[in-house]
Length: 250
Image (cartoon, rainbow, N blue to C red; front, side, top):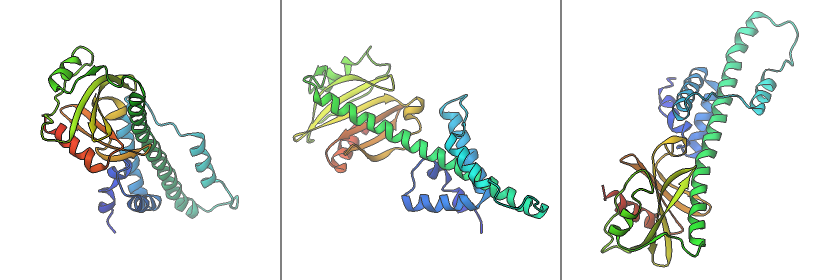
């Protein structure tokens, strides 16, 4: 059977974008196919090189233990050359599939950590007595306030005719990178809009789309070199409505 359908899913599998059922199917295939496992590992190495130049994947103690257990000799001391030929591909598949699995798990945890940090920033801002540093519902007041405080500029949407109200903004940081945090109100709910330059390992490899973190809904996307995050305790449809307004400013 051709491996092309599986190879077509490898990038989505490595980026954690497949459904749990599809991810299990791809993982099971990688455990039995040396060619696809090698291909997946090659893509892992490319992704890691792009995300962090000069860094190398070093197997953890857990990985070494797994590999050691997999190849540990509970077999006769004298092994025929025929069995050695059969064992080498099996060991190679085991090593490659475990390495890919470790990478996918770490990337998924890293991405979830970014979303959790943004949810924490949202909660922390709303918990203070002054959630914004520039208080205004006028986008022409809020946008200029950020000039000289962050290394980029952005546009804000016209909210007339919508349910959203701009409360103001503040400078915030994600992994020591400065960005803008805007607070919008929808009915009795506050929604944070975070804007950062789409650079570095923290944001550049994130998949766009809706997700959840700490019971908050989050939608994120890239536009004109910037990464936008919309975070709030409202429904996904409300977040998407605000995201649509923001996308329309460019």
